[in-house]
Image (spheres, rainbow, N blue to C red):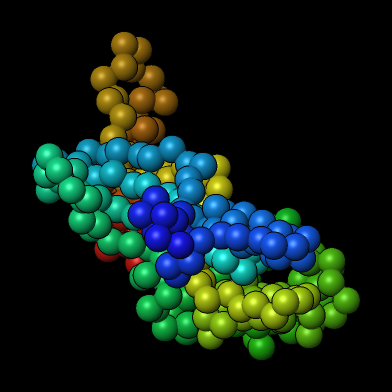
Length: 239
């Protein structure tokens, strides 16, 4: 045990060991779970520049010991405050912002029957009735609205304790699921140069568009494995 502690391979001060096939199986499961239980990233970080600010956005995920929940993270760093050593402080953490938000403040939109004119807010499930309710059930390929409600409640996780199906019993403790191969995309005011060689109607159209949206607030967009694209205020990290 002392050798394992010194090498950093112990579990609670005890070395991994096995004296029979059952112990070996249990020990190997424990080892692999501990290896997997870590933070990973499959997303490229994104660096943006706005005036004197230099923001870095980094997405990652944790695989928890129950092997059921993969918690997502999106962290923002102001690179102008990063020192030469040590871990940089986060400007905001989206997962924390999302978990701290009142469930009633969230909005989750989807199209019905792939029709952009039929947008519904899934947060207002009791208000989705009639033809919209029937179409939503069909779109989700579930048996009925009760099942649709259960799926949406699991995805939005207002209680932060939504139960996974199956055994062993496990609960989803975070509202943000893993961000896997999705890179942050920041969209702010139009910023392309409009001094094009050939001044055409297309040029004047873009100039008008650029002027009309000069005060458009910056938003960060990223996808997670809850099957949604999150729209986030770039400055505050709120949903």
